[in-house]
Image (cartoon, rainbow, N blue to C red; front, top):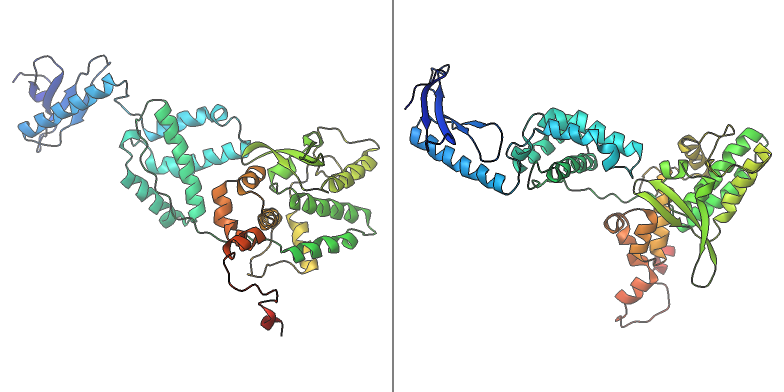
Length: 408
């Protein structure tokens, strides 16, 4: 043992300065052995406490740690994992590039989740020391301390995984710990039945005619907003609000019939949406209304849904609620309040009922097959093709209604 001005005990375990054990002089009560490692091809030292006062136990800890870290160096891995805080801030500094195809709203959500939820919890914890247990405790704290829903917590975990993916790409960690996700509670989405949809668009034909020009314009835009959503399935937020005349084009089906295609940018990046036959009438109404207001056709760069001053209409929520009250459809038959999103759900539901391929529908609607199966899949059992397949071995072939007793 050699004397050293800062230590009470100082041991060069291998005699080459690679593994040095010592006890600090300023730790007079129950001092424990510390280890200082000098790894090949690295700058500086790795210093750790062995957490034991027994020399032999401390030596085993020191040698095991040395060989573990030496293996990391040989594999090109980082031996000093930065803190979660440092990695998260580095991720945010590059988020505009990493998420270059996503909306500013989505990027802002990422930053909000990181600053308000992830950083306060994980803080300076080294990235490679965040375990599955710590992840589980984080999830519990989200429910316990913030009273968040399962869906919100899952969104937060998605952001957390992006930070870990970034850390792995940078070489800060080798593997991403399992991120436990709370079970997603599946609630059937509120929509309109075929009869209700027919009743709604029929009601709007007279409702839109109002002697006051300002109210008539508002109703015209709401009417065609609803009909466009119901025949395209686009989302009622940014996808509709940012839709411009230049985003509208057409294509042809196998029989040469023309169909409107609209290009939208929203939750799932840029995509082309093929619309139902007849949707061109609703765009034409708005185009003619705007042309009359301007005295000339609207510029291609102007949004379709605009106020008279040319600024995009931010929301139809209040006017939609008022219309629902007037037509008597504020809630569905399960007691769920209808919102503009109910129109998108109606589009998806109707396409499923008509037997549209789920993969193609998911692509057109900008969602996943899993989401369609979770929220709408039960409706596919009413598809006549599915009914025929399921009941093809039935013995009876009666054409009479099986539910006549309900009509008595």
